[in-house]
Length: 224
Ligand SMILES: Cc1cc2nc3c(=O)[nH]c(=O)nc-3n(C[C@H](O)[C@H](O)[C@H](O)COP(=O)(O)O)c2cc1C
Image (tube, rainbow, N blue to C red):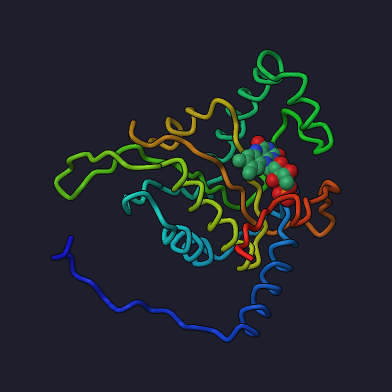
């Protein structure tokens, strides 16, 4: 460890006033992020997707294993195939596996077994998590905290796309192993989440939801 090369940290210390100002602006901008289910099919600039994925790829990860892989699908035929297979799993989930409680939680969101956004969104970013990563020689190494790390990267991806002016929808079919087969990923890649991304339609609506206030989502343990 002592022999590992080290570089100076690239960090700019801000004044408390500027920090507060930035944190407020970010809070308000993030509060405007909503999961969108009505997408305009207009293609999005590829570089925006690439930059957002690079931002996601800068997430912290257990032992810096970077246990993620992002597959960007814009091919209409593959999107169609994903939609068909996803709707099949949804029908079986709603018929056989959903609990009454889960159904109740989904009801206000108006979601059902049809998934038009899977073909309507110009891009589907399928996020995979890796329990093993290969080094240059092809040798596999176990990753650490792949779930947590990929969740963090996915959060950063959503934030980066939002800040770049795109809407997203996280979508989690259950089970989602079919995504590995359709996208021809190796056995070591586990589907984690599908992120539909694009512009919302001009008349898009979203469920009226509330967000918990600070006092219910945070506890500050102060010494004085
Ligand atoms: C891990 C995860 C899985 C989700 N899965 C689905 C899904 O399968 N289908 C769907 O329509 N929305 C899905 N959502 C979106 C949530 O319903 C949405 O984030 C929540 O209702 C809050 O709304 P907001 O994102 O607009 O703030 C998912 C969100 C997360 C974080």
